[in-house]
Length: 455
Image (cartoon, rainbow, N blue to C red; front, side, top):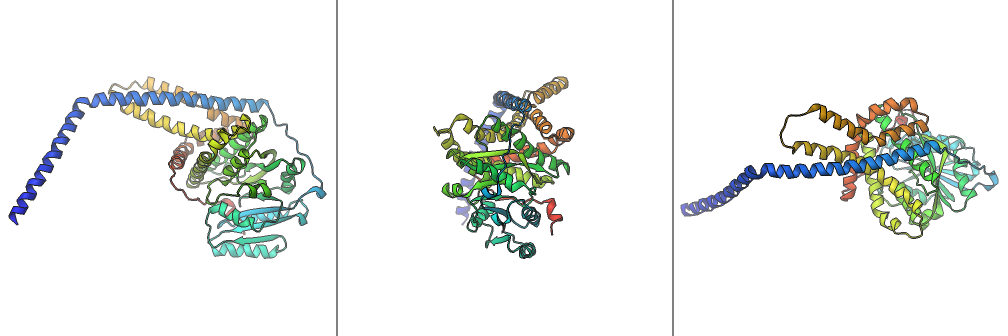
């Protein structure tokens, strides 16, 4: 037994001495070459920082120029009325999950000035809370000739799974979809269906979102600014250059026939609207954006919910672009202007990613720099200059606030951007990386103010 122990000691000592020698060699190498290694690292991070800086300057300056273009080219879109006799049968879908606010949306839909015999309302109730389902059923019984409730055993596939299920019960030639917190006006249905009647090539129509709780919190300001950027900058710009646009997941109308022919919704998609928009674009189908038709909605009003929403949107958009980028890019039947929407979608999240990488590479460049006395005046002046040079995105947001008649809210925008906005940049970057590296992500349900007043 003692011999075995002695042998084990010898083996252990040999192993320990072997790794000790390696450790000593590595440590000695570090002492001799650490500064040289740090110098090379500094050169790498410093060079990468300036490459990213120049790209960000160009990208944000492009945004600013597009914003100026929109200021100088006002909306000339005109809506054409439709006779009652020409109106088709429409299915309104309201997918919901533990959201009592869906009843507020349904009430608004009941009041449409659309012929009552020409539309139906379906509430797709995926709720796990039985008390909410009971209230939805009670509401449906009060309007049993107008409202239908569909249910599944689980909410598998999230919202797209719900939409797929509701499609089996939808009799309309066209489908209008509302998230539960949206509150359409009385003439909404008639106006969003009109483009289909006047142009048989139209496959989808998107209305403009209007955030009702914009100033509730700093999180709500950022949450409301993102739809403002989309609906007063991105989509209007595509309108001005006569390009195809995209649908936004709510306050939208789609032709049911085209949806079925193109394979329907993808179960589990986190941004089913973007995926379907890219499908339509690739198939040469027409999407119309109505700048003159608005629909009231909510923005996330807590930082946690805002981060959940933005991470999901970032993940979903990047995933959709990964799926359809090459098909659309190489589609010879599409004009370049009809491919612009894909690049606009991508560029927004690229800008956020660049801001994050600028902060990281800038910090690493400072850490790996040779020790010296900090020249605070130079550091502050250069940092300020870099912020100004990359402020094209913020200036563009200011332009969108002018276009959306929220000029008085610009100081709140600046405050929210340099507080809550910095957190969102990190969260969006996480969503982008998760999509790039195919990491799974679930659907996040958000708290909605309307749930407190719905009954």
